[in-house]
Each structure stands twice: as structure tokens, then as C-alpha cells.
Length: 123
Image (cartoon, rainbow, N blue to C red):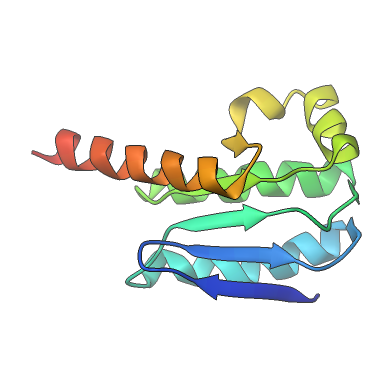
């Protein structure tokens, strides 16, 4: 699976460069992302600009992956979904439980707010 990785000061942007995200590819993506939980910059923005379709199994795996990050007090925001991917997530009732934003800039805003929340709750 081809991905573009862009490491910023507080987060890493992962951008799959595939038109279709299959279950096997989502497994590869999980293998790539889970080690970030142990890194100094653990927060992830998954930028889905190029992904035009995913199947139900992939959607479920993305939701599970995102939940794993939040269970470990790390942020994981998905942004720039195509209409077809967004429709599938809504159909499978995953859209409202996942942290999704329209743009990368808004995803960064969410990461900042979550970081502030973690700091407040840890005090």
C-alpha cells in the first residue's frame, strides 16, 4: 500500500495514495499506524483525499483503529473523505462515532483541543 507520511511538530499526517481501501490494505495501515502509539509524536491525521471507496470491513477496522488511539490517550482524526466513503460510513452508522473533519486544518484544530482536554483532565 502506498502512503505519504508528513511528520509535523505535534502530529503525523498519513495519506493513503490508493483509490480503493480494501480490508487487507486496512490491515497494512494498522500495522503502519499502531507503532505511533509509542512514538514521541503519536497523534495521527489520516488524510483520505485519494481514497474513493472502502468496504464495510475496512470501515469497521478504521473505527477500531481510531478507538485504539483514543483508549491510549492519543488523537486520531480522519479528514477529507470522498462523498462515497462518507456515505458508506453513514450507512454503516460509523460516521457519528468516528472523529472526522472536512479539512486537514480542522483536523489539526481537533488535535489541539484534545491535547488541551488531556492536559486539563490530567491535572
